[in-house]
Image (cartoon, rainbow, N blue to C red):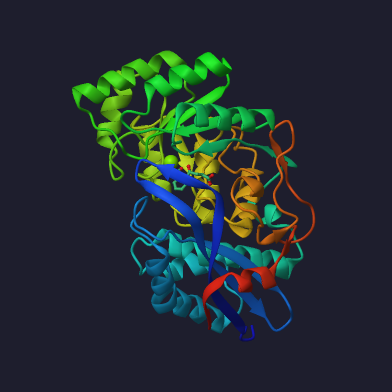
Length: 373
Ligand code: OSB
Ligand code: MG
């Protein structure tokens, strides 16, 4: 096979969030992403999005580390794979194996390559991810609010718009009373909480978990340390509410082991955190429905579309965190933006590749840093 020549662009973009997002680890009013564009001389184009936080609060990777790891290690190894023709996704991932960790950086490039392959084959990205559904059920993740009233009004607004499930962020002091109040106000809505590692196995915290057991929560997400499995197993043995792991899961192996050893009953699959869409796809296929749902990282439109296509796989029946574009941004980087219908579904677009157009001028007008390879 002939040598394939491709060009890669890395574009660091920033967009203001319409509503600040507060978790137990911090508050954020701007979203950053490193958009990856892969193009060849025949006009095929792949788009990917690298999750890139300004601060290492959720994970150790940031917009600075992902940029450098891609620039120094991943992009050179990626380009090298084209010397003997068109590589497979597996070839690309093999080429990343010499870099330990840095899954966000890997996933950004890998996702762009899936989209490039979809473009080259004239297929929908969903087709490549093994998707079969034409719409996906969805929910919303609501940050810690300045007051109970603000939270209740925000929840009411999303329920009115049809969102199927509400997830609220919790931290010590903002937990069971808040949950009790939501139940009182909104009855038996689909409700869950995400602690982002704000608790321990202390007596005081165990009591909080026992109290929360009374409220029929769908799950409690990542209550304990961000790098822990075993304490979660201990906690799961003491409470009824299913534990869901987010921060602790970085690979297919972690996901399987967490379920096998009952450290968690459900996994929040975030493609960036598990090293890309190939791994996310395999985790869903191996664990099956009831054990997986798709989380989010406040993605801009490109990452959001990838997340929608992977959730169109049959295993994703639990509503995820993929909300409409307007929940995050005044203007999104894709056209049309993502919309949630009044029953809480997002329809999966037809057409090739991402099924929407990418607003390249808008991306460039919000770019902070740009580099081509
Ligand atoms: O813990 O799931 C999380 C956003 C940023 C970092 C971590 C998390 C989140 C969310 C929001 O919960 C999910 C989304 O709306 O994309
Ligand atoms: Mg989480």
